[in-house]
Length: 139
Length: 475
Image (tube, rainbow over all chains, first blue to last red; front, side, top):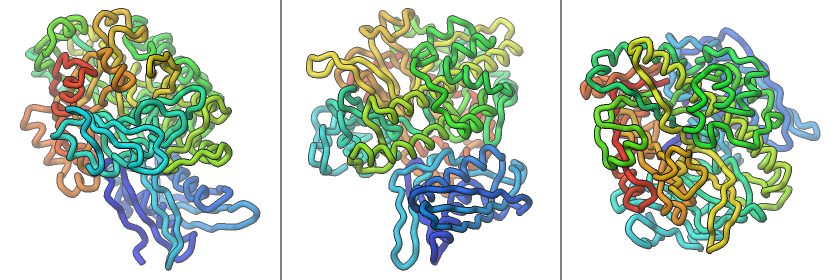
C-alpha cells in the first residue's frame, strides 16, 4: 500500500491517501497535503502541536482535520512532517492529533505551492481493502 | 467537448439532460480555437451548477473556463431571491480576489531604465509570499473596520484618497457585511495579513500600454500608448479562505436540513432568506471588503515607491474589479425585472452604460473590465457593454485560464529557466519561490488574446487597450 498519490487537476491539487485504519488514512492525508507544498525531507522535527477535534462523522472530521492543518501552517508559520492521529467514538467522533515540525525558514523550505484551503469537491472516504480518502486542495 | 451544441459563433449549449436534474441549460462562451481546451470536467461542472434551485436562464462559463471545484473557474450563475440559493462553491475560497489598475503620468522611456530598482523597491514595500505579514499590524478593531467598510476604511486611515473610492466596484465597500459571522480563526488568519499580496497567481506588475484599440474610450479611461500602468492582483488572503472553510461546514449541514439535492459537496448552499444563507452572505461581504482594503493599501504603497523615484508621478486609479463574489443585482429576465444573487467565480462584472452601478466618470461608456494576462503575457482593458446584460448577466472573463496542471507545470518547467526566459524578453521578475514561478509559467495558460477576442466578438465588452508586462513582483 502506498501512503498517498496525486491525481491530475488543472488548477488545484487532487490526492488520494490510504490506510489500513482510518487513523493511518488521516495521517497519510495530512502528509499528502503537506508534501504538495514543501519537501518533507527539508523539515526538522523541532516542535510538536496538539490538535483536538470533534465531528458527527468521519468525513466531517477528516475535512476539519485537514483544514486545521492549513490553519496551523498559516497562523503558526510552521511546516510539518509527522502526523499521528487517534480516534475515539463517544457519541460523536473525536480526533486527537499530534503534529511534528518546525517554524518556516524560507532559506531551507522551498515551497512549490501554498494550500489556501481544503475543498469539498469530490471529497470522499471509502473502505475497500484499505481505507481511502480523496480530496482537492485549493492552491 | 462531448454532447454540447453550437448555438452560434462563440456560444455552445450544454443541453438539459446532459446530466440528471438540470433545471436550465448550460452556456459555454468559447471560440472554435478555445473549445478544445475546455476539459470534460469543466462541462460537467457547468451542468452541476444548472441543477441548483432557483437558477435562471443558464449556468454559464466564460471563455477562460477551466476545471475548478463546485462551479468551474469562469462560472457565472444567477439565482432568484424567492426560491434560489447562495453557495460558496460559486464564490471560491479567495473571496473578492480581484484586480486593480493604476494609470500613471509616466512614459515607458523614462521608467524602463529604473525597472530593476522599482521592482526591488516594490518587492520590499509590499509584503508577499508565504508567511508574509503586513507592515500594517492591524488591531482587532481595525480588522473589524476593514470587514465593515473596506477601502473606505483604508482611506480614513490615510491610505489613498477619497476619489479612489468612486473608481472601485461597489465604491470599494459592499453593503451587508456582518463581522459577527467571521470566526475567531478567520480573524486570526486575516489580521496579520492585511496589506499583503499573497502567493500563487497573485502579482504586482509594472506594465506599458502597448496598443490602443479604441481611442475614445481609452481617453475616457485616461490611457495612452507608451504609458506606464500598474496592475495589482490579490484577494482576501487567509481571512477569505477561512470564512469559506467555516461556512462550507455550516452549509453542508444546511443542504441536509433543507433537503437540497447537490451533485458536488462543494456546491453546499442554503435557500436565500434562511439564517445559514444570511450568515454566509454577511461573512462573505466582510471578506470582500477586506480584499478591497487590502488592494487599496497595496495601491497606496505602490504610489509611495513611485513617488520616491519619480517625485512628479501621479498614479490614478482606473478601476478595481472583483472576480470571485456573489452580489445582489437587478436584471431583466424574460421581460421581468428580477432581484438576483449573481455568483461570479473567476468572472468579472462587465456592466455597460445603462447600469447605475457604473461610476459617474465612465457612465457614458461603460465600466472598465480588467483582464490580467499570465506572467509574461499581455493584460487587457475592455469596456463593458449592455449586450453583456442579455448574454451573461453583465459578466466577462477574468484572465487567461489555465490549461496545464500545476504538477505538470513543475515537471515541465524550472522556475529559474522561466525567469531567464522572461528576462531575455526584457521582463524583470522578482519572486520568493522559484517553484511557484514554474507553475505560473506563461505556457500553462490559454493565450489571453484569444480569450479576450471571444468577449469582444460577442459584444460583452469592447477591447480598449493592451498592456504588456515590464516588471513583476510575485509571492
